[in-house]
Length: 373
Image 1: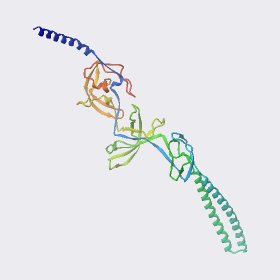
Image 2 (image 1 turned 45 degrees about the vertical axis):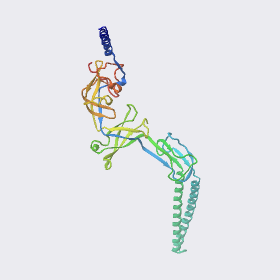
Image 3 (image 1 turned 180 degrees about the vertical axis):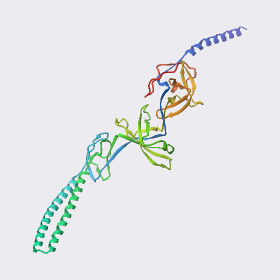
Image 4 (image 1 turned 135 degrees about the horizontal axis):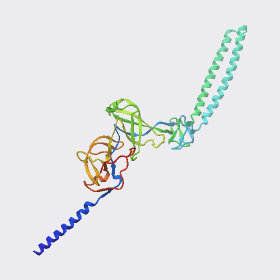
């Protein structure tokens, strides 16, 4: 009986201790920083086919050797800005200069021969009129002058070709840009067609992409395209469709589009991989970040902070903006509601929370009046 009484007393005491601890656990709260919460806001959402690819310069030129010759000097390095007409490389022009001198001499000889032939033709004409020589002799003088004229034209053509050949030993920039590659060095012996330098104009980029054929009727030249760089945080940039291929690729069922992207500040680099979306549909709507939505539940739900506690709310979703990573909320929430993100999504419903500071406004949005608490 004593043992039974002691056991009963111990059980009552333990239950009493647990009963006192329960209120303390209920009062404990979780602190959430600004990175774990977001506010539902009204913003412009856009939707359309997703496009991706590497950014390329709209203007790019690979400068190649036009003559077989050793490289005397390379005057440009990778990453160096250049102006149109600037000398970038110089090839050995000794042989070309010799040909130029020979061509100039040939022109002078032909010019002198032409003056002699013209004078002889003039004298023969006067003698033929006086009957001193026959008409046949006069025609021979005319023929000699024509032959010398042809020789002069040939010499002048060779001179122009020699000058052009000398010019081919000097490689100049075709437009204002930046040297992106240098494929030769001083001392290299190059052949016609050998690459020397690549110059690009980074102020305007282009993306060659494809969209499903069913979107062809909803896009046109000038349709905006929004991009985001992977790992580029919230930074986005925009371009416009410049050209649309009129034919559908039979193997993929997609249409080729060509998007131009201004890059005046040169914040984007040629060759970067970018993912974007053709804005074929847009509207103003209440939106929240995609990462706040729990798609494992049916219907989808979010955790909302209300009266210092988290509560699970079912939501009806609408337009999805893949570039901005936002989604329309048609019902279940209203502008100003605070929802949790990231690891905080695993909190149990009813958990008490404290916010270290108000959720930051989304980029490009004005102030929003919070819902009544």
